Structure formats: structure tokens, C-alpha cells
Length: 185
Image: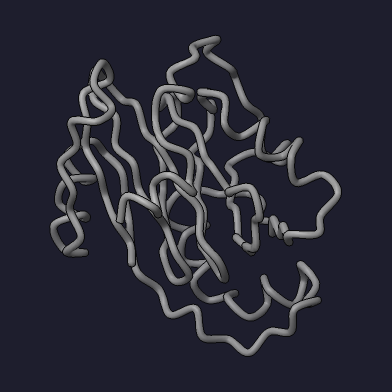
């Protein structure tokens, strides 16, 4: 279930938990973050190509391209047997920003975004069907888990795609990993 936690940056254990999707939308809208629920219901095989996945969701992707001026889209697909899963996880787990909006539509699987727009940290457990749009220059990090199994469509306003500007902060290490988040329930 999509879940939002809100905690002071200095006290990761002092969380407010929000599970009602309309309430999650309202809380995230207050910080300029869009979350929508799409139907992740296109029949796709486990080995579906990037082109097949993008074609299955073309109307939704085209709507977002028109709305935000996105120039490119791709698919990130990480399975538990991916030999680069640990490197990918480490790269995403460092707090960073982008000069571009970060947009993810979870076609399959789940992941945990942490947004750090001010002195508060918002943790969003996203699952299949969730679309999350993080504004440019918002500090954040993402945990795909130790045994990732996800497929996400990503949209970009530039042709370069995903480019991180790392903040150098170690704040991500003070907040729960995906596994810890799920254990807390």
C-alpha cells in the first residue's frame, strides 16, 4: 500500500504516517510534489523491452510530456539477479538533486523515495500504479531495496536523462532502508 511518512530531519523516528491516498496527495501537494494513481494493468512479460513498456503506457506518457515539456522517456528495470543492483542502490541512496523534474511511474514492484525539501523528510513508499513527480532541485534519495524487482517509466525534460547532483549529506543513512520501512509496517 502506498504510504507516506513525515519526520523532522533531526528525528527520523518521530514519524507521522499517512495511508489514505487522498491525504497523501494533499500533503505532497503542499510541497509541490504530484502523486497520481494510474492503472498498472497492461499485460507485460517479465522480459518486456523498454519499447514495449513505453508503448503500453503511451497515452499517459504523452499527456505528461505535453503537460511538463518532457523530451525523453525511458524504463529502468531492476531484477533481484541484476549484477549491478548493489551499485544502483548505492547510487540512488545518496541524497541528491536534479536540475530536472524526476518523474517515476511504477509499472511493477515498489521503491521508497525520501524527499527533503526543507527541515522535514517525507518518505513515500511507491508501488505499482503510483506516479510520483519530484520538482527540480528538491533534495531526495531513493531505495530500491536489497532484492529489487521493479520496472519504472522515467521522464526527463532533457535528452541527457538522469543526472544527479549529490549534496554530500549523509542524512539518508539516518533514515530507514526499504526493508526497515516495510518491517515497521
